[in-house]
Length: 168
Image (cartoon, rainbow, N blue to C red; front, side, top):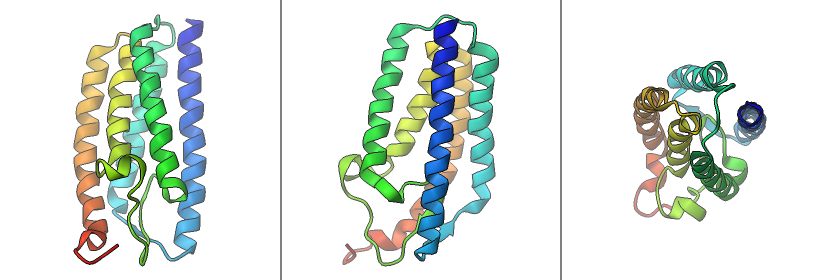
């Protein structure tokens, strides 16, 4: 039980810290001329992620942690650090287009177009499995897949000008 509460507490603190960083980056990007796109999906995404974490607190705080799944989750967190370090001050939870700036093409962004979403999908599936909540993992993975399909479509449209031939 103590380990489960510690895991959930650390994940919650991480998510809150990321929101602070994302908000700071969003304000800075908008002040520098960035343009936000796809605002309609944002409240739905926030609600989904909040429900996922709050539901885990409700269902998992007193369940034993499965160390193999916890190790898998920790690997995802290493990948998350790589993603965030690669995109740097341009990382935010919103879709901000920076006119005149090239897309990030370093780190995992040179390998796949949306590495952060791959990590998030893994986290949403794996953390419930740490606590033996396979059905919970499946339900939220399906909901997240629908959300990501919407978000990636919006983001790809917003970034399309950067992917045209002749652009950096």
